[in-house]
Image (cartoon, rainbow, N blue to C red):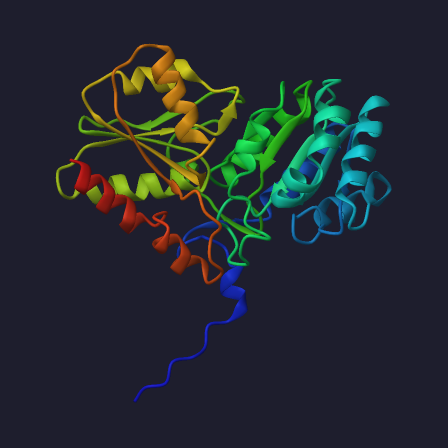
Length: 327
C-alpha cells in the first residue's frame, strides 16, 4: 500500500493561488510603502499582526510612522481615530474577524460617525484560512455594510490591491479593505482593467450567462468562463470590487437581459454581494432570478483550503457544475 504524506498545517493558511499561477508578493505592503513616499500623512498600525497582514513591509520602511498596538483591537481603532483627527491618514491592520467582531463599536462611533479617513485592513476575509470559525470572517461584509458612510472594497488580486491603496488613502471617509496577503494571484493585468473606487467592470462579454463576482471569486469566475467556453457556453464576467457604495448602473445593465445570472462571493450568502445585487434588482423592478454562489449560513469546518473551497462551492469546478445545472 502506498503511504500518503500527512497534510501539513501550512495548507490551512496557504495562498489560494493555483499551482504555477503568476503571483505578486505582499502587494498591499509594497503599495502602502509607495503611497507613503508620496504622502507623508500616511501612517500604519497593527494589532500584533504586522507579518500576517503584510504591514511589516511598511514598518521596515517607515519605523517612525508605524505603531504596534499589541493584541488590543479596540485600542488599535481608537488610536487610528485619534491619529486621523490630527490630519494623518491611518491604515490599521488586523484579521477581519477581530475588526468586525471585537472592535465594531469603536469603528462605528470613533471612526465612521465623525467620517474620519481611517482605512481598516482586514486579513483572512471569508474562506482564506482553514483555521475554523475563530479566524474565518465569513460575515464581515454583512456586519460592516450597516455602518453609514463606510466604503467596502473586496479586491480580486494584486492589481486591485496595488491600485486601490492610494485611492483609499485619498478617500475622505472610512474604508474597509478585505486584504489578500502573501503571494497573491495576478490576474486582472490581462483584461485591460483599472481599479476605480466605487465602480464595477465588465471583464468579458457573454451571451448565455452573467457571473457577477467580487474578491478572489472574480478569478474563479474568469476560470469558469474559460472552461464553459469550451462547451460553447458564452459567459460574461462582471467584477464588483467595491461592495459599498455599489455600482448599480453597471451591474443592473448586465442583469436586465435574458441571460442566466449568478453572483459569486467569498462570503456568506447572507448580507453580502448576493443580497446587495438582489435588493437592487427588486428596487428597480427587474423580474430576474439570481442564483447565489457563496458560503452557507453556517460556521465552517477547519481544514485545507483547497478541500474547503470545493466542499463549500467556491472552487472553479463547483462553479462550472452550478452553471451547467442551471442552464
